Structure formats: structure tokens, C-alpha cells
Length: 211
Image (tube, rainbow, N blue to C red):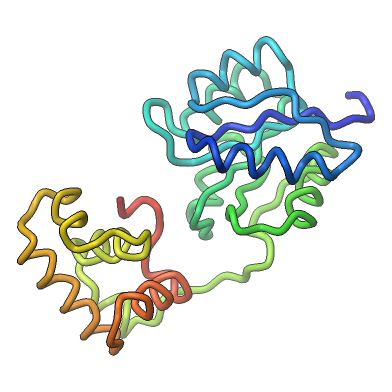
């Protein structure tokens, strides 16, 4: 490997890719060698570019990040992969590492945390836990009170979906969406959606697999 760390960024959202690219541009020892908007494109670019590190989004249309990680790891075992997602929780880290990733980080990581992870991973380290976190479990009185359907509603609510958008996404009526949102607010003991979203993220009541 050369002294410069060659990085491929994989994310289906253009603005996320460009944001990461801007961050990496501030690190003189890191070179962005390519961008991909899908797992399939990432496979092709890994073959042609041979990056040192792939920053891999977990959730993408078509071949998702986990499947792409498995394929890249099998075909190019020398390429190190760091998973990125909105919610990086312990079971997701374990799944990505099992798929061949060297780390899995939340997209909220700072510039220093991201570049530090890249440096450690390229040297052969495996980061078993999201940076800046410790193992936590949602309080039983909260996680047990939220039903499976309400977890999906809560996940969409936390992403900023309105009740009609939640209804369309999950395939039920607006009145049903209204009912679930009201029930969620009551169970969490809050008066508005913003508070519910904050609790959902803080107490790890939801993750990306709820969608």
C-alpha cells in the first residue's frame, strides 16, 4: 500500500457522498479515488480502482451495503471496508463485521473520528463498536411498550415523515397512522413528534432495519 490512503465512497445519496468527499479533502494523506451510488457500482470500481478503503452505506436500492461488503471481501480481501449508516448500533456493527467489514460507524461521526477510523482500519485494525458509544439497551418499559408496527411508524416519524406519508409508505389509512402516532406519543410520555423522535434515537428504540 502507498503512503496515501486511497478511498472509495459508496452511498446512493449524492449530497452524502459529496459531504464525505469534502471531509476527506481536508486530510492530506487521504485521496478520494472514486464514488459509487450502488453496491453493484462499488464492485466494479473496486475491481478497476483497487482502493485501500471503501466507505460503504448500509441501505441502498438493489444490492445493499451488507451484500456488497460480502462480495467485495470475497473478491478483494485486501480492500478494507468501513460501513456507514444513520443508526450504528451494536447488532449492526456485528453484522457488518461478520460480512467482512473492519468497522461500522454512524454517519454522525466527526471528521476526526472518521479519519482516525480510516487510519486504524488501513493498518489492519477492526473497530468492533461504533465510535463514541458504549453498549446500551433500551429501557424495558419503553421497548416493551412499542409494538412492531409502531416501531416502523416511529422510525419513519424520526426521519421526518408526516402522518399521510407514513400511511402511504406502510400501506394503511391516514387515520391508522394518526392512531399509531398518538399511541406512540402516549407510551413515550411526550407531547410532540420532535420529543418522540429524540427519545427514539437516544434510547435506541429503532434502527434502520425497522424500515
